[in-house]
Length: 382
Image 1 (cartoon, one colour):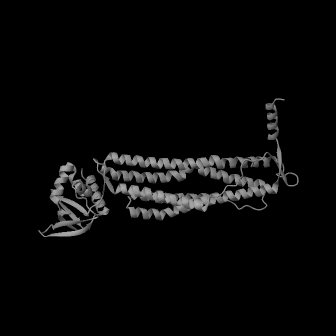
Image 2 (cartoon, rainbow, N blue to C red):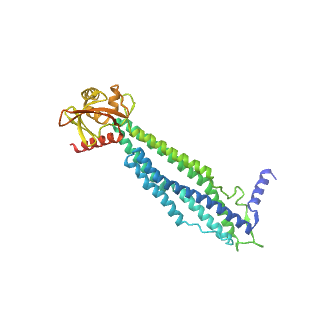
């Protein structure tokens, strides 16, 4: 007989081999594996819910510290949804405790159901875990790109495209990891349990002679059903890295919101102003400090008339906008970059009295108020 025929005959015989396994030992092995699997799923779900709930106050704090736009807070209901979905899912698929003497067939069926539940959860992760935060995050990036349009539409568009690309790449990677886990971990486990379940159903009584079960082949020969849980060190490191990435992204976005690029040089300027509001009497700026209005005489020793003249010469029809909204850029290009505080010389609107105010803070709140007032004027004008 040729070697190939010997090999075929051996394979045919080995496929029909029936291995006798003690039913009690097999039940203990299945129950032990089931408990390990449950522990892994419990710690994973606990970690996901804890992170989502922990991020809610962190999200409010970061939004207040960075003075983020209102779209930043759209992620808060998303975090509530993610935590709530996981809790409701666990309640609807509550795992019954394992009885010491329960039938082996019932134990295998329950293990198979739990594995199939996890396969469904990970295969549909896009809809319940990835899509909701992607919508809120992209809304935030779209809003910030809209706010950046004062630096030029091209810059705002590039910023939005880069942000969308970052979200797509990150979430595609997360989706790929979960589908890979289904393919390499859960599906083999499911096939092993199906093999064992079909073998048990083939038995007329579920048990062989002397409490032994006859199985065609070894369903657990390739790898153990045991799946180790993630260590606490890995969980802590993963949480730290996740929070660090969020802080870096918030810092970059906040820096982009609170700076403006020069369309010619590409240099960024802080968006700050010492005035709560600005209005005009022809070419004379009137500024609001606190609750009072004054004529601006000079800023950091620069006469207001000189500042206006430079803005007209440099920015032409946008000279008022630059004086109001882009004062840091304007003064920098004049060769007088402002510090965090400035000295103002102002004049009363009702008299010729002037006064000098030192160390007036340049704040982002003032500039934001001026910017919003300008947008309202633009929308109200025909």
